[in-house]
Amino acid sequence: MFSNKVNGKSQGQVSSMTEAQVKSVPSIISVDLSVQGNLASNGEIQVDGNVQGDIKCKALIVGTKGSVSGEVTAQTVRIHGAIRGQVKANSVFLASTARMSGDIEHESLAIEPGAFMEGYCKRVATEAPARTKQAKLERVAVKGQARPTKLDQGAMQQAAAS
Image (cartoon, rainbow, N blue to C red; front, side, top):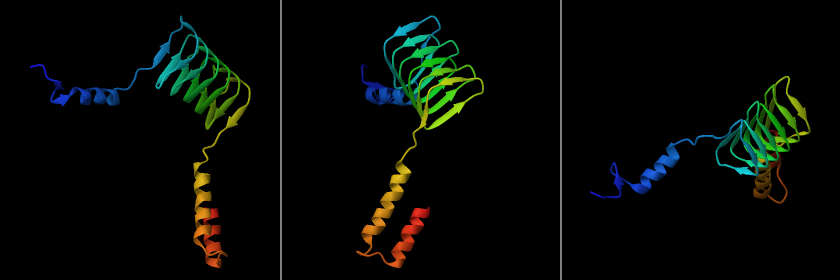
């Protein structure tokens, strides 16, 4: 009658299922809301109001009437409104209505015509492929004799070319 099972599954199984299956709803700072302080989220934040503080999240959307004053760190940032401060993200998109004052560190950057951008843009590339190629070259040299043969040198040149 009072068991810990729901539909034949224990309560622990049900709670972990719902966390994994349910997509989180974005946190919204509405037009009439002003926030002073830092925001942190593992999900998406949409700012249509005013935020004075740093934001760290998975995805940030700044609406056309939204504004952020502070440092932004996220995987994805879409700017339709205003940001004053540094942005660090894998992907950054500035819409035609965007007003960005500050530096951007990014892997991917898209700017629509009409967007205002004042600051430096720095592309930060992932270095994993370069390290892997260097590690392959080092392994070839270590496996070879003290003095590489012509066959080993050809393999190293071929690995460096790929």
